[in-house]
Image 1 (cartoon, rainbow, N blue to C red):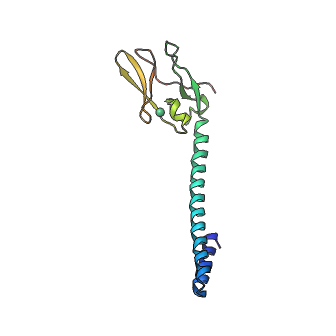
Image 2 (cartoon, helix red, strand yellow):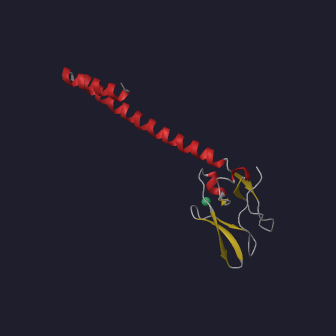
Image 3 (cartoon, rainbow, N blue to C red):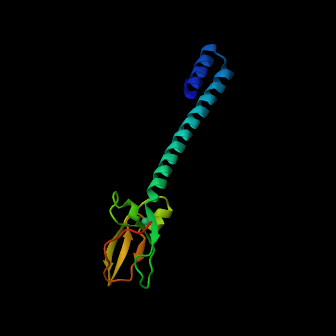
Length: 138
Ligand SMILES: [Zn+2]
């Protein structure tokens, strides 16, 4: 029997007994159990998301692919994951915030910038053209 079922049973017994004080306390118990049940659900969900992110973030390594003036820093996929991940760059701000967001190259003016569609971070490469993303050594 779950804690929630037990609290409901206590509530039903108090109602059948007709004791108003007992019924009031049983109702408060039911509310407290429901709140705990919801909080437990939220914590489990948060833990599952954190576990998924911990697993995903292992695939990346911080790197500076462009050695020009900007020396911009991005996350790139490690070589050991090339069988399952297409090479790409990931946003360092989003990574620090616990999510993956793939950076897209965009020419603005003379130079190529990497744009994050999630947080709008714009990373200058200081180059007029860049090669496709490459894997980085583990
Ligand atoms: Zn971002």
